[in-house]
Amino acid sequence: MILRSIARFVLWISGWKLSDEAVPMPDKAVIIGAPHTSNWDFIFFLAFKWQGGLKVRFMGKKALFRLPLGWFMRGVGGIPIDRTSSHNIVDQMSKAFIDNEKLLLVVAPSATRSRRDYWKSGFYHIALAADVPVYLAWIDYETKTGCFGTPIRLTGDPKVDMGRIRDHYSDKRGRRPEKESIIRLRLEDKPNE
Image (tube, rainbow, N blue to C red; front, side, top):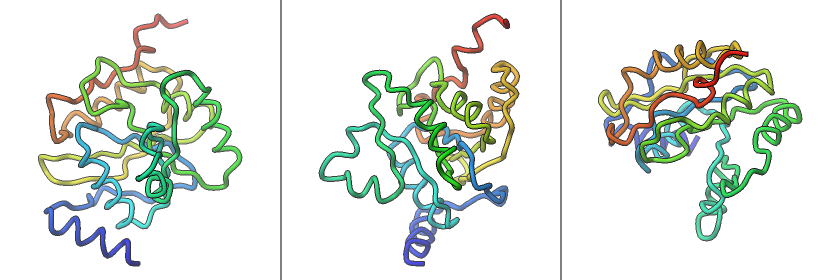
């Protein structure tokens, strides 16, 4: 109740709102968080999460979980990820979906606040491996609105799936639009087998 009140105050004072497009969340889903261009995105993510009363987890770089912020990051649902080497993150996260009755996992596929030519494909592989829907959550600085998303089921065809995702995010703008990553996976460049 206190966190919901804090969230409402933060959103009210900043002029932001949770979109009317919000839909009920399932017990398990991978949630795309985009566009991601500013540290402010995290503040609004927490406010939307608390206002909606959602128990959402998120992956973050391991460095964010050290002192002095480590206790806070874990407390608000963070899962530390070592991005310096391959640690089978997809397998670990898909196993987490199997091991937990409820898991809503937010992934920022750009994996950075800077412009990239491709999104990271972890969210795609995790959702397919765990057989869970993907929710297209967004934050739009032009309208000062955010939403936990529209659900889609991945087909396993990256070109088809990413086309739907690109269409969804085409009118959403980050705080720094020039830093928005291109909504594309390297998987789309591979010929169909």
